[in-house]
Length: 355
Image (cartoon, rainbow, N blue to C red):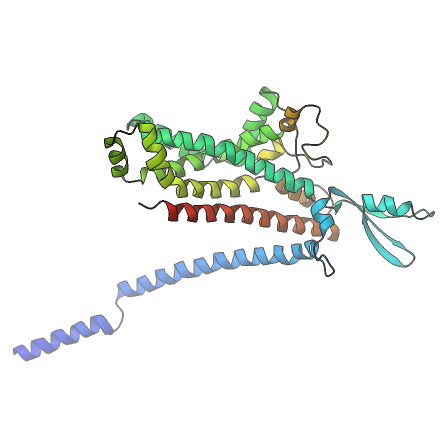
């Protein structure tokens, strides 16, 4: 065999490898690629179906065809009983307040069908949800960032530190119902706070604390050591270095933890069921107070607990279905708004502090 034949054979083999039939490894790679791709598409499709269903059915509750095109009663009133009746050939669906006003205009006795929690609106639920989220995240971010600073900047590497980090990660996997029972036993009963905002705040804060600590610590540890060394070499103290050269650059990661925390705090039902939420409360937390500090020791209505009540605690019908989907629509809108605000803050901080 001459050199020309060998060169031609080698060239042919190379062409088969590059352009010929796919090898077994390439076939496996293609199969794995399509498995991942189809799994992603399946998850996105399921999410799209759920969101479209909520937006379509909830939109019919929240929006109207006439000006102002928004159901203001649904967004501004408390949940009430719905009265459904027929009068002079016309079908009426009135909340308890409007039904009493209607009865004053006529002299006849009206027989109605009543549906609990199917009239009025969800304004107290919106207020209660916002208060729970803001209070819990304020506590969680304060305690979580302080703990992360200690673990990242002051603690000494060793078995004790590894045990603490492992315990924090384990706490992140504890079911929310366990935190609810813990909050009821400690804050509601032992501390005597009863079902109140402050009991709900601390219970929810402890629930998301492991997430905040872990994400914040990882963000701080990712900051180059050279930034710290340069600051210390110029005579700055340890705390000044952390405050000026670590925390600002770690802020995007801290905000990421807050995004995850907000989504979990806002969506949890079990913890607030034991510590903070009422099924029905006409007054807002700041109404009817004898002292200013009574504000912290009052229970509130909340959107996730309200969805649970109207979905599982009362007979189901077309009117309760409208309340369920309308509440879910508003709930998703609020969570998306808070999350979007956190994302925009994170983007702004990331552009401002680059390393």
